[in-house]
Length: 389
Image (cartoon, rainbow, N blue to C red; front, side):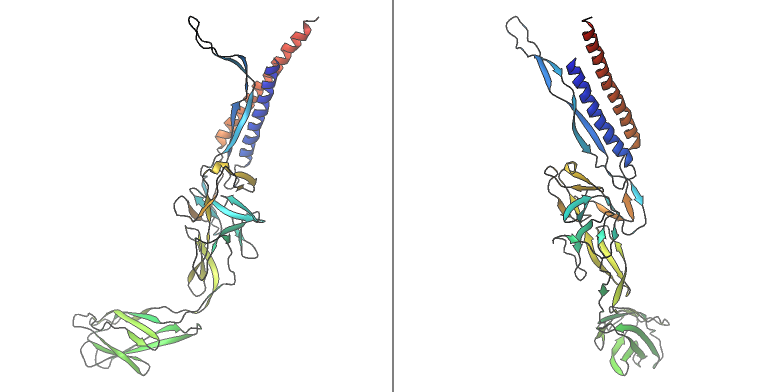
């Protein structure tokens, strides 16, 4: 009877733990990237009342006779099944599709999380809601060393895209093969020097007396003829040189009665300031500058573990590595073993309310049944004490 009392008490304790875990799951049904937990029970030691006996001659063997001493919590496991996606439209919200964790640093302590609700602080660092700094690789001159040591991801708010001198330009379109001698066509394009100062490159095309030939001038400087065959194809393939600028003419044609000559490109630019950013699926933050250029600013690091279930919850939807989780393996999204990233979305909680309410009923009935063990044992003890009367 006393054994039954203690078995009932162990059942009450274990089912109370199940109620606590289930209640926590339900409470976090709307927590970003929350992973539900489940309680696993196991029996405790069993008291041996009769040992096993081997068969001997005409006597058969006997099985052991044991009385169990109750139940205990074997463990509380975390379910890392992917949660559903919730669209937010915020560029700093990120969701991991597949395996992996974001790496963060809070007061020097490395943590891991799947909650990608990030923002920038006053220093331009990418941080979580509780102030942990997101880790990754910052770009140097637009280049990211994904094999280097990770550090705080920061957005250089005062970043400037340097100016670039124009050294190449390209012409496209058609020069009329049947133009009259002396006809001129003037085309210009804005170009830049090394300091980003803009100027105009103006070329004048003059039809010569030779069939299909146009002479090209930059101001008063003759920079060479362009010649077309009778079928309109270009026979002069060498580029033109206008000062320090090489002008590509390879795509020009010379068909009759068609004048569509235009500058199609030039590779210079003025200096630009950072105006915004976007995120690629591999976690690269790409800055957009006022001069129309885009440049990589940094890349978010992801971590995977041999045993994610071994991670320790630390609050704030974060985890710590433990001896049984294994060492974090760092990498980038869209590479082997790591998931991909979606910008403008968050991972929702993976709690299944229908399952949790069912678990509540199971835990409640288990608690009631174990309480009945205690009351029944108490009634028997009372009967024993009444034998003295």
